[in-house]
Image (cartoon, rainbow, N blue to C red; front, side, top):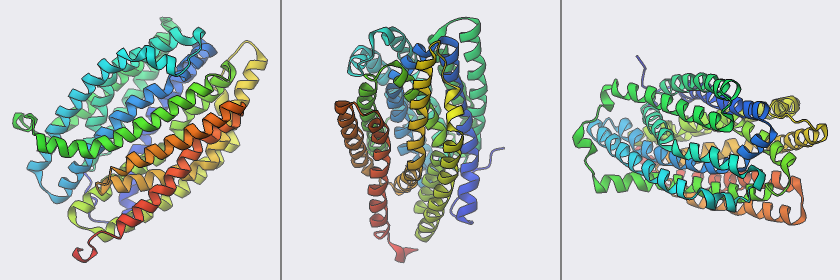
Amino acid sequence: MTKNLNMTQGRPLRLLFLFALPLMFGNIFQQLYTVVDTAIVGRGVGMDALAALGTVDWLNWMLLGLATGLTQGFSVRLSQKFGEGDLPALRRILGQSALLSAVIAILCVLLSQLGVPLFLNLLRVPEELRAMAALYIRILFGGFPAVMFFNFCSSMLRAIGDSRTPLLAMMVAALTNIALDALTVFVLGWGIAGAAAATVFAQCLSGTICAVRIARTPILRFGKADLSFDAPLSGSLLRLGLPVAVKNVIISIGGILLQSIVNGFGMAFIAGYTATNKLYGLLEIAALSYGYAVTTYVGQNYGAGEYTRIRKGVNTALLLCLATALVISLVMIAFGRPITGLFLSADDPIVLAQAADTAYRYLCVMAFALPALYLLYAYQSALQGLGQTAIGLIVGTLELCLRVGFALVSGAIFWAEGLFVAEVSAWIGAAILLCIVYYRHLRRLPWKEN
């Protein structure tokens, strides 16, 4: 039986690492099927299909960011109630979160499908790639309820210290997705549509595994009464979840504007840029995992009134983040060229060389700035655990301004490297702001009550 982890007792280093480790493995599997999906499309369908996938990548990230942001916000209140030991309130929060997630998922499907033509125009998707890009993104948009389902279930489990079930879910989903990718692309010849359909099916499967665990966990068994609409509680949950979700959407808007400029640099550049962007998920795996651990750790200790443990735990997480980022950066710089080459295939050796060079140069820029990304996750997650999610709106706006500002200048003077800098400048600026806000808020905690 899965053990729920009470993070209000014990050494912070051990707790954070034990909680984050299963998430790292789970995220590795999740990113594995993203990477394999990209490699299969690039090599099995062609570089034009890879470029088409890349042109709309930020649209997919926008809805994913909406799902993760909302459910992370909902889970903050759940982890605080778990720390307090208030189980009736915990179940009520779970029921309202489920209701809100279902309604939002349905609305997002309708709005996103209607908006596809507008999105493609805003992204300036080249005409020769537009049909493939539209087909791919429509399938992913249609599968958004599966994304919301998995993120809701996994975030609720993480809030009570269960990081192992999401690991199992992502492992099963990754292996299933890889097998279906190979079947639909290489055997059935469904092309980019097959890859998208395989991803949606895998997300349904991972959500189902987490839902079964919730049903088998006594403290999470909520009844019909918990699903009846509770306006004050729903409002409280949305006040926590919406700022994180809106922040992710704002970041996505910046990414969409950046991608629209990238789309004007030609197919070889788009393909190389896409190849590295697919590795971005691998680069941030540990940061994302540490972030979930920090949010749960801070949320539980805040609910229990253990404020000194919050400071110690976050300091420990910062050191873990910096050490991990340094190791990953060195590996990417040393082996990045053959790794990015796995995604690329073209009949023209000149085009292939241009794409490979773009991919590696972009990867090196990301690697040098990776510590900033890891600090960003640590500080942001600590503030979320404290219930301070509204800062995300300011952070998202700052990232938008930095990303778009650098991109506009780069596009105007046709400076390709400036597009790489546009991405990492957003990380650095956001990390600095979050650091300042976190330490200011830390001083306001009622230390005398500890």
